[in-house]
Amino acid sequence: VQLQASGGGLVQAGDSLRLSCAPADRSFTWAFMGWFRQAPGREREFVAAISRSGEKTFYADSVKGRFAVSIDDTENSAYLQLNTLKPEETAVYYCAGTSARYTSVPRVEVLYDFWGQGTQVTVSS
Image (tube, rainbow, N blue to C red):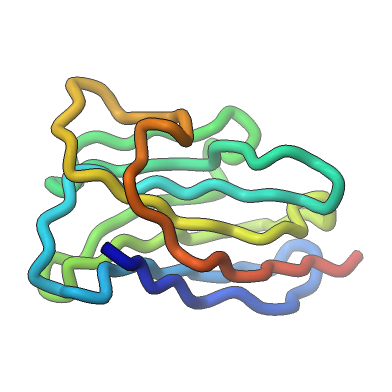
C-alpha cells in the first residue's frame, strides 16, 4: 500500500504547517499512522502516531504540546499539525502506516508496514 504525504514547505521559526497522509487506495483500512522525521546527518526519529479511531495518540517528548495528530474519517487520512516550529526541526517528514492492531501505539519503524515518500519541512531562523 502506498501512502501519499503532503504539506511540507519553507516556513520561519515559530510558524505552523500541517502535513497530511493517506493511502493511495482510500478504501484501505489502517490501524495506526505514524510520523517520523530525518534531519540531515541524523537518524530517522519518531515524532507522533495515532490510531485509526483517534482514541490513541503518542508523541515524542520533543514535540509534546506543539504538534498534534488527528484523523479525517471521510478522507481516511491522518494529519500532523506542526506548531511553533524550530530551525532544528528542519527535516524530511515521513508518514508510515500499519494494519496491525497493536495494543499500544507503535513508536518504532519496524512496526510499520508501509511508508510515504517523505515531505520536506524547512524552518528558517
